[in-house]
Length: 188
Image (tube, rainbow, N blue to C red; front, top):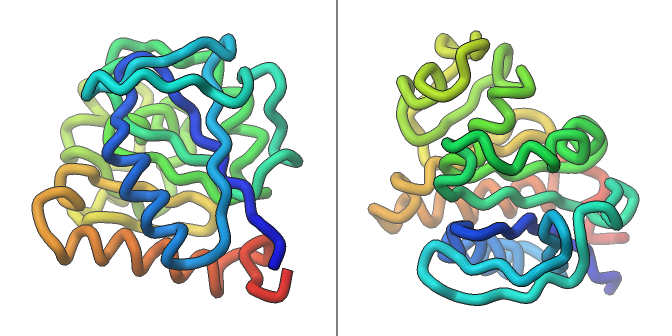
């Protein structure tokens, strides 16, 4: 069975537990290998203090290199950091699934990708607070995760609060790995 590549963006302050939960769900759903990258390929220290040496740097990443892009949360998204990854996100959406968790959903809102699709995030006012051009408030849902085409948004707070939130994330990962995107076809 061919390994599928899950590319995860890491940066100082990334939410390692969100990445760990996502990888647990992906391992449950299929045969995935984690490849991490940071902006400059340097070690990143997570929100919980875990020092992580990435496999590569952002400049070496292309949507052709992976099957799934994961953007874990972290306060840097609220500070307006991580802008360097915006071109990769834009190039990936529509071609490969993108999972944005917690604060990372702000990047999708900044790019206008949540203006006309169902999505979740930390809370409804969070987008308006940090993304002045956000127009998707009528599409916001208070759910643990929502899959809309190749965009999957995750409310990390709801996932962490209950088993149903964790299983909601796992069910969404199973759904996209089995039914939503040809790259996740088990026959590949």
